Length: 434
Image (cartoon, rainbow, N blue to C red):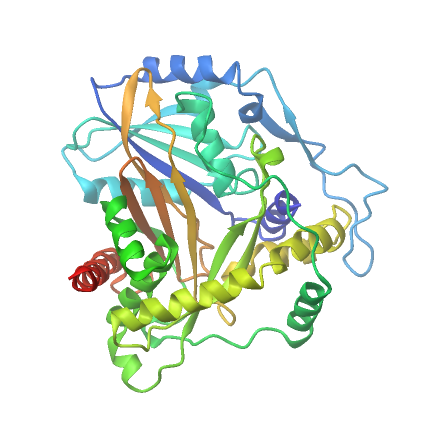
């Protein structure tokens, strides 16, 4: 049903789209275009999910209230195709000659302004050439209409995975929701969400295209901090994010400690759905304690909040069983579906989106060459949203990426500020050990 929502959004707001991506660092001898295309063509023979494209895509007619009538025209569906043009899906993209990370980011920013074509299987691979960085760089881009974070990992496994296990643990099924869960959902819908804090540091309404910056650290560094503080890696990630945002907008926290809120996507994909593409995601709103000056207390507050959310954990199940199967049915109005898809862009309710798809623990290789690093590129509602942040793990590394509207001042400093906050938490963890 999430696919219907994202598709409705792109149709209702022409020119707006939501694409996701991953940058792959590939070791070994340089890879040429012919070698990459041959690898992809071979993988697609056993990966029909990556040949899917939309068919019967005509929008249903609407009544005077803007509601669709699915009885008159068929709804769009995904259908596997045997005629994928690999030459169209795997292309060369030039990076300014001799440029390093700065030139690479400029190219990624430019490609992020070009929507993935929904008239074909909605993904594309770019072999990046001309940079001065070691090895080969391959950029994978896909439409969010077809892939959420779990599906993104599945696509990488289909294209480049070695072995059968993706390494992503999924539940067998979800327990039946409790009556209290329905009451909480109803109360939220009736009362609405309290407005989040608006930061002057955003520089006004979001404007301009998406801009990407990222930082890399050792995954074990996050785990050590989490163990010493008896919290999760996700808690460490969010606490460092709260600290980075505090430092980035520091003057504003001397007057008020009211938090800002992040929307965190939560997977509701089960093990029976692990081989599917599509969207199986809900979300929770998390208050980031940027007003707390002490990094240790920030971590304690974040961990306390996430524990309470887990204890009350039936909300996502209710949304899956009740909302997704009723309100988000294909017969729902396109207007309502578009509203649901854009929930992360409503700046009155959430200041940013903070995602954590987890670690892809299977090894990846491209035409026999090992993938040595992976940088996830979280999507941004351009012109609506100030910031999205994503934590991605691969091998022994963790990568945090900040996707910001070009209008956000000093957005390029956020990744380094996150690393600084992480170092402070590591120092506190070392003191606890002593």
